[in-house]
Image (cartoon, rainbow, N blue to C red; front, side, top):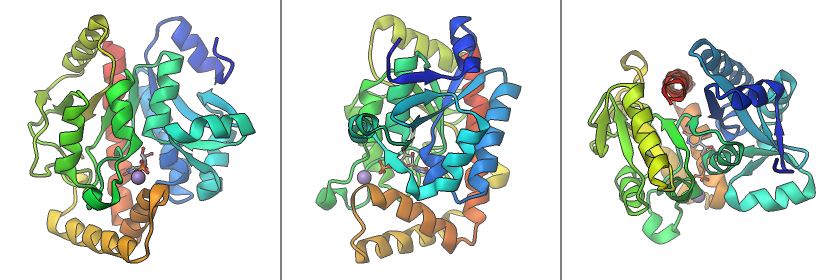
Length: 301
Ligand code: PSU
Ligand code: MN
């Protein structure tokens, strides 16, 4: 087994016995949500995965090793440390691992780790994408290239409109990533069920999604799949309201010259502040909804 991987006993047993496992990321814990909601959400995600028939494998880098499945103490460490733990994408992995450091893994890094561990289904909130103004800044999340190359299905609620959703979909098309709308033709926009753009295929059951993933694996076609699961109606936010908030957060980031890996955490925190926490409730609800679907897909696989 790979020297850099450390499995929790529960995940190790589940993988050995071929039982369903769902990967969960840790940047959402350390950088995506404030303490203590990040800790309660991380714990509840694990509980929901189990209740839905899959073993949760929350993934993070601890002491220079990639942990697949965390203890409650490790979850708490990541939740309390927040931004003090390095946000870790593909490019950060070799340096952090060789230094023996800790890291909270993004969608890209979590996909890499899940793939190394043999886990094919991963649930998160929203993925990174092509930022607004990318024609000037070239700010395109490494999550998109990872979806193009690493064979893990990612269940998300679309991407926040802090991003340019149209360009994000163009990029995914170029990289050959299927974008499946779960129960919808629309591409959801995280806080809202529609973005004005469309997914490239609609599927209505976890079994259909599992069959598509199995087909991709059997074809030997590398690369991921994006399953876009719209936020439950009762938690969705009013589009004009959230768009206004996002516009002002994006403008503030530009004014302050925020760049590189700091952009996404800055925007997430500002949106939360400007909505007085209302966006956080929506964020938490959609993550639970995604974990439930991912567990059903893993079970169907
Ligand atoms: N979008 C969210 N919440 C998040 C993230 C994105 O709504 O927590 C995190 C994820 O971990 C994602 C990362 O992989 O931000 C993307 O960062 P960047 O744009 O710097 O690639
Ligand atoms: Mn970026």
